[in-house]
Every structure is written in C-alpha cells, then in structure tokens.
Image 1 (tube, rainbow, N blue to C red):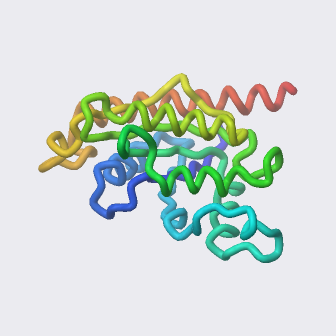
Image 2 (cartoon, one colour):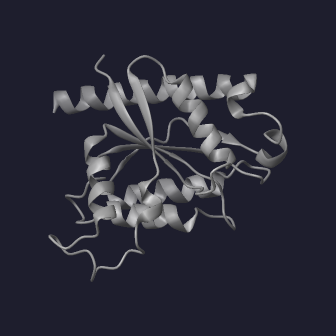
Length: 192
C-alpha cells in the first residue's frame, strides 16, 4: 500500500480545543500507510469573495491552502458544532477549496468528517453539514465511517482523547476503515 498523505482540518481555531486534541490523537494513532498532517492555515483565509478570487492576484493564504489540498491524497475534517452547524471558518475553507467549480483542489478529493462536541450527540449536525457542503463542492465524501464524541467538555476536562481507551479504540477503527475506503477509491480509479 502506498502511503496516503491526509490533510487534517480542525474546525475549532482554539488552541486547546477538544477537536484539536481529537485530531492529534488521530494523527498519533494513524496506521501504517496513512500520514496525517494538521493544517492551520485555513484560519488565515479571508472571507470568500468572488471579487478576490482572481487568478494571479489571490491572497497568499488562499494559494497555500489550495496547494495543500491539491498535494494531499485525502482530507480529514475534525469539527465541533457551533449553534447546531459547522463553524464559520470551516465553511469558509470549504468555499475557498470549491473554486473554480469542477476543477478545484477539492474536486474528487476523498473527505471524511469526525468530531466532538459539548452537545449530547457529539456534533453530528455539524458533521452532516460539512459532508453536505463538501459533496456539493465536488469532493468524494466518505460517509461509511465516522466518530462523534458527545459531552466533550466534561469527558476531556482532565483527560486528553489519546489517553481515553474508548476513544483510542473508536479512532483506530475509524482510521482502519478510512484507509480501506481510500484503497477502494484508488482501485476504482485504476479500473476506470
């Protein structure tokens, strides 16, 4: 199996966020063949504006972000839930990655979404919204596997997710299924 480079976008910009911790745990638990790299540059993106999205005059943060997605074999999104939906910075990042539509950096790129939330359902509404937006943007959304951890502020108040045996097990299972899905996508592409 060829190593897959996975770009990890964390929807929470807070340095101590439980979603950042979940992303760190996933990177630590990545099986052989998956290399997860957390990307923080999406926090520097300006709000999407088609007047600014001009080839040759793009902000440096947009060029770097689109290149990071292009260079990745897949994207893993780790998101909290803000007011029942995905964080504004993540939606903005999806918008920037979706252009130009049909030939963007996210077109046909495998994307999976996981996360944790203070809410009782673990942020599944935000995860569903992220999957929907990425799908409309043209990504190859992997819906067969996910992780949604509820009550994050309490559960991880004194314990990092990487030290929680149940979370480690969930993440390991997710990462194995994610790697399998990526291999399946590769096989389909080679057969086409």
